[in-house]
Length: 187
Image (tube, rainbow, N blue to C red; front, side):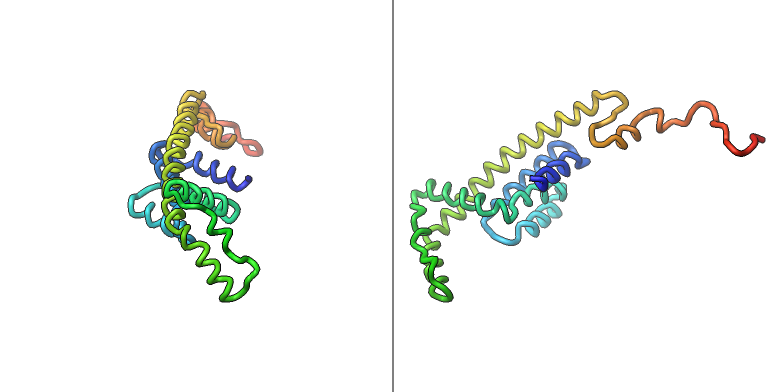
C-alpha cells in the first residue's frame, strides 16, 4: 500500500499539464494489462520516448502491475475474455498440479491453451477500460490540485513546507534595508 501511495505522490508532483500527465499515466495503465509478460517497463519507455510522453507518469501507471497485483489483474482480464468469447474458464482446473517435470508442463500447456485468446482479448479490454477511467480520474485530481494551488495565497502549494516558503514573497525579496552585520563594525 505504501508503494501505491508513493506512486500516486509521484504522479501528483509531476511538472506537466494535467492532460499530458493523465494521458501518460493512462497509457501506462493500459500497458500494465498488456498480455505480453515481463517487458512492460521496456514497452512503456519506448512509447514514452516515441511520443514524447511523461516518463514518470507512464512508469507509475505500468508499475501498478507488480508481483502482488499481477495475478489478480491477469486473472480478471482472462475471466472477462472468457465471458466475451463464451469460453469456459474450466480448462485451468484440468491441469494436474501433482505432476512434475515434462509431464507437468504438458498438462499445463494443454490446460492453458484454450484460455490463450480469452487472456489476450480480456486483458486488452480491461486495460483499455482501466486506462480510460484512470485518464479522467488523474486529470480531474490534477486540475483540482492545480486550481487549489493557484488560489492559495503566495502561490504556495501543499507539496511541502519548503515549497511554500520558497514561493512566499518575503523569502524571495530581500528586506528594504540591509541587515546589520554582527561582530563587525559597519564602515
